[in-house]
Length: 194
Image 1: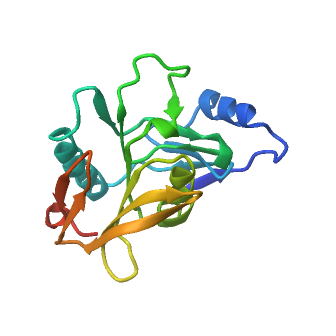
Image 2: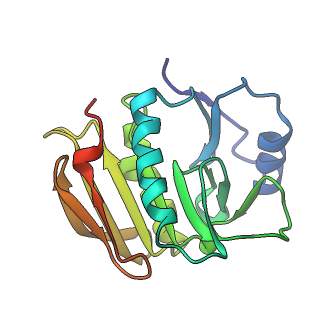
């Protein structure tokens, strides 16, 4: 199953779009995001996708401070890019008090991780990194299972406007290092291939 998009009135305000996103009854188990002002409904990720996210999450917990969390279903808001995005993994300080129960400001994030799915890899390669960079998220790890030249992992950093600088790219089977504050090596040899 591929992603479904729900178009909204271009004159609709950001607050109206978020309210619609929060209040609508979406299919159970689906991932519902606002990407560049368009509500996108994707099916639940496949097993291999989840295995990759779980292996990265397990490694992240070994290095993050006690007052940080690793989240799989927490939305982050990037109003300037008309985005309400749900990364596969999000590392951020624990937010015990927030204006919303459904999302946090993207700028609170320290790292976002996306694992591509065949049907919507373009979002993870183009739309989402532009929003994440705009929000000033320091690090973006893209695990691209469907890269044209074979599966890769790319770490992006140094956001400037809506663009990241690629810091490192490895093919599956090679290690990739996350810099401080993580100072962590992730062995992509542990990742299942598509």
